[in-house]
Image: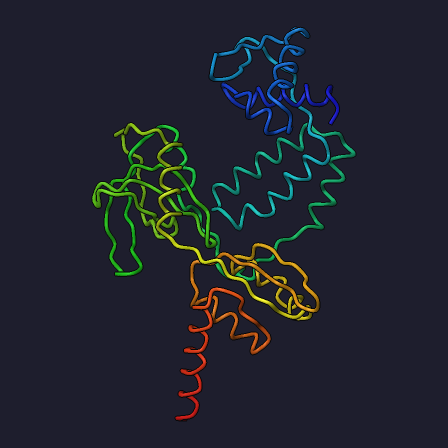
Length: 317
């Protein structure tokens, strides 16, 4: 990216937040802080009223307005691609809001770009393999976001699958996580006096209360994630397999914590990071005797026990 384009992009970035840190700009464009300072001075010399708060960041004067931003075809295409995935990662309310935003983006594009996007729209599909599961009208994504922004306590009716009990909770939300194909609310539960993970599709009712709470959300969320990492042990795993087998598992390996691979002679050495040795051993069993376990040794023991149990079962029958 040349400097003129970068200056324009920095100006656009300054419009996205109340205050933008110099480090955020440096990270985005992979430049030094010294270069950021020079670019900000160049924008100021060009007549852009940029304010600075020591130790915090840069901001645009409230009275300064810019003409509407024009999207490039590449940027609009990327947003369209995201729109194809949104319905599978959210609920109908969020999907409708995103589609409305996409219409606004299309409305400011040139005619030839609109035609290109229309062609692309019909040529891109997302197949998840679980299309028979209907999309819910709401899993409260919008309400939870509002509660996070305003630091409001949520009153929820939550169905716990492990004991099949529906309970009511007052919780202080600190973040949203998406993993294992579901959205999760991370919040401080007043009933349990501890942080808890609530799956959104198990929330039966949700109400934003007038009660507020005082927490630094970014700090509380980061601390929660760090604690989770410490509490859940992950095992480093290394295996050797043949090249033909490595091609067979090109898709499935990512479900088991694949890190990297290296070809050594006729074998492929693969490394994984996985929290469940038993689950990993079951996967290896599907590859019969084509896998050599380098470490951990305990994985061999688990496999041997599984094989012995299978042999005993079928010998009896």
